[in-house]
Image (tube, rainbow, N blue to C red; front, side, top):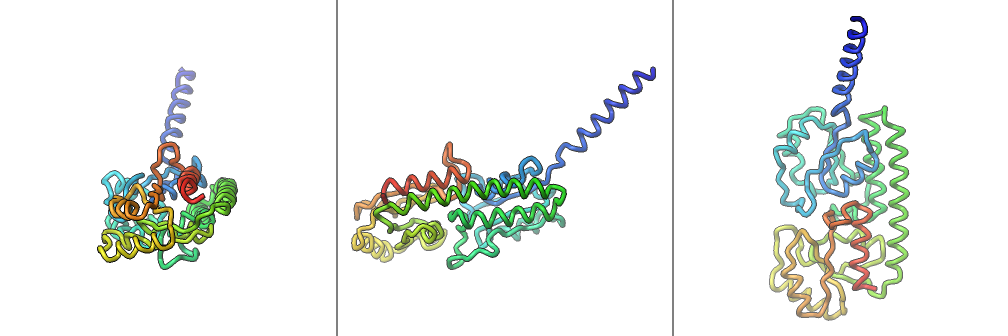
Length: 281
């Protein structure tokens, strides 16, 4: 009888511990795919991360899903870029009503270009974002400090290796000028010595006027610009028109993530560099 009771006690303890550990990871929501990679790289198994803006979606037109609201209701952190990219941030947090939810803005402390939110497209900015995420995780989960610091250090090494690789390859390109459909590549251009000559869609939801299109077409001809950067999140009709008029090549890039086989940030950045290189080298 005593043996049976001991077995029952052991079974009870194991089940109790199992239920106590289930779901005990720190719950962290992130706005866009690159931030998801940063959080997973730093947080490891201590963090349960939820992506809000899914691959292929446009952050400017994002609408939150009920399941995401439920996740946020129990989350401790919401990691965002800021600078107006997540225009819906305050409304969502207010609707969730979670007093323990802390918003972490990863653009803080980064030198911006006219309020442009696409900071992560410079790998050295990504290093600063990873450091901000590390500090936030340590702050809300001090028991995981060693894990977060070691993981962040390892990932930062990968980011620095990525930066060195891109810098070496871009330095050998014979063409440095480009036109962008959507103004996402200014940080990349600033870091690696490229020149963004014009942006076709000046702001989300506003199509360029015929006069603006004609002006950009003339500019492409005048300077012999070889590349027009377009993105999977935006329809490229106007860019196609300019390319047909000038002979410039469309370069399909992805600033957010969603390229099959290149879903992670490091792979995504190498994908974008390779697509640029096909035209600008």
